[in-house]
Image (cartoon, rainbow, N blue to C red; front, side, top):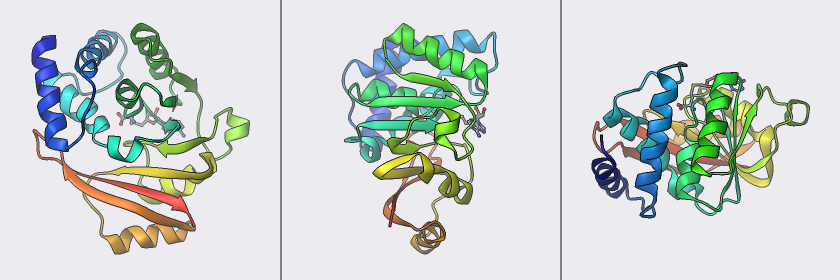
Length: 216
Ligand code: SAH
């Protein structure tokens, strides 16, 4: 997919999601896709390799949470894999400090290489998050995020240890959960639900929900 078509499709998708991004974001994500597919031919980073699918399932799915992330000063993406959602969010929000953590070295090597090639200035850390940020060398952040990392109860058990005072935890979910279920999951960890928003990906119609939690 060439840059023009990619950027067009990205713009269509962003409009459908109700998020707006700068004009440079399409070309920069097109370049990121090129790096991802180049690396992926040698080291297995992602099972999603068709450009249309990378565009929707990796990039648009990451950008969909911009409303929840915009305004944060620091973002920590745990279990970032090939850099999702942290890398696209950083491309869209150049003043956001982003740290991406993964337990697999080759994924962190890709994150670092992509950051250098695109001049993103993100921090890639090869570490296993198990709830002890100091010992693991993982910095706390104002906003914690992860995609396809853990189920919700495990995520709400792990994430708060990595949040700065006053910070928040974002959960990116598939099928939407009811307000009552979300409140119950939050209460188990002395958290409260700040917001919950259900939406669909623009081309496949896949269901998503993004939920923000804060400490009580
Ligand atoms: N967030 C990415 C990758 C999801 S796959 C995406 O949505 O595309 C889950 C990733 O979490 C894998 O890359 C795996 O290596 C990593 N992982 C699993 N347990 C981890 C842990 N305890 N700490 C850090 N990374 C972990």
